Length: 229
Image 1: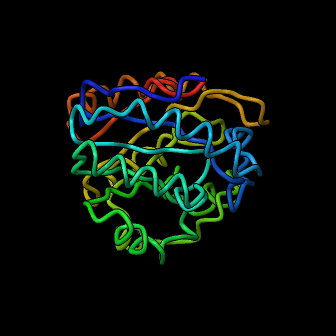
Image 2: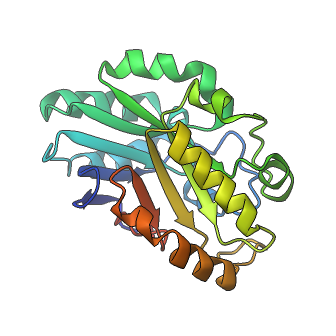
């Protein structure tokens, strides 16, 4: 499992994949990422401290991800991140959070004391597909609701059952409402959801121009940021 990497193209930054307590929701139908969680705080902190020691401050920007939300990281890990931010003169932080924590984002901003770009895994703005098929439990209805709390959205494309119209609408929303976005092309895993190769090929052809957009990052493989397994 690679847990530290440096992103050298868009939004240059260091990125770490940390271990955390179990995801508060943990029922998304497309996700087996939560297998990386642990209930042992000692185990979590021991691993995370080793990973965090690799941070150099090269670009003064750090992204911290885990198999859930940043709020599921132990306090000692969060304090270690804050310590390294000060030591390495980190000026901007990227964090991820589930929709259910939206009212607590300010707490995390106050804790770290530097600008934070909060990402949310929207997957799609289609309400039914997001909450019924993907079982995301993110029950907003408009992009304005999301924009009130989050600067960056993560979309997912290429799942059987998705349509071209859904993806067109999602990308239109992202381009018109959000400063940053990550588009994840679905990679089959141990869940029952299937990859739609025809839809993915259509997406690649129609939206290849997004690769030139400095604020849109496309992950054709779930390890394209250099972390994961």
